[in-house]
Image (cartoon, rainbow, N blue to C red; front, side, top):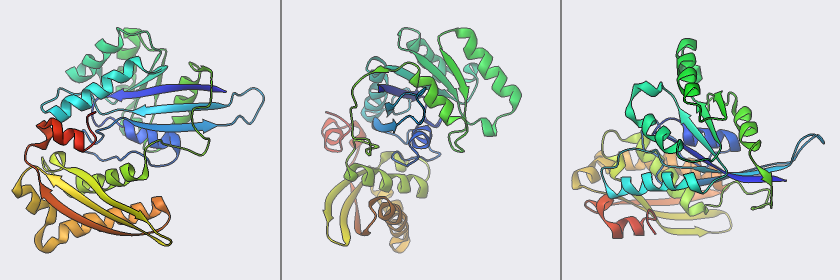
Length: 299
């Protein structure tokens, strides 16, 4: 069996989590159109048994990382450090872009770091379904000229286009090894973590501007009974004014977030869910080492 670890890196909002979900065929990482949605490194486990003698059995562990950006808070520093540390821990790297290298400094910053390591690298040009052919050609040629990528693949992670090509490309760099996880396991994260991320995803979808990025979700109760799972979660925000926005007039906003999250959590767990949500203020928690540790963003 070919096995190994693959890091998925890139700027915020280029489609890293969407690609991971497409590879696995199930949603384990939250996705929104807002940058910096992913805060933790999330491991997705892809296991495939060959259907012909010419193919290899494979188990690939994909590590979805936070978007690499210039941090403005300690949370931002943690997210960027978590992504960069992946470079030296994996057997291959998928670098995702959706624009020309000349479009801004973000991709150039990552390319400069990738140029310094010998880990095999695959460039994925994402969102080709929204891209003119000439633009795809320009992006391809710019990155091909750099000469540090073993393969360049165009995809639409959202539509599932060429995702199998990405899997094949990284499999080529894997070697015979042990099976790290059971074949029916798609993530090592506990259900509590995924539930908290689903709640945070709905907050990102329901709210605009700076409010969602100052929000953390803590699961205080997760009780599985015969025919129902009881969940109690606290949503922390940084300002009293944000608390009002989260709750909404007559509690409507919070009810909408809760209803949307509960429906997805029920589909995930395969059981009815009773969920209580509260909102509390913890000022400037993104710059507090203690708060970051309590929320699982720092060891």
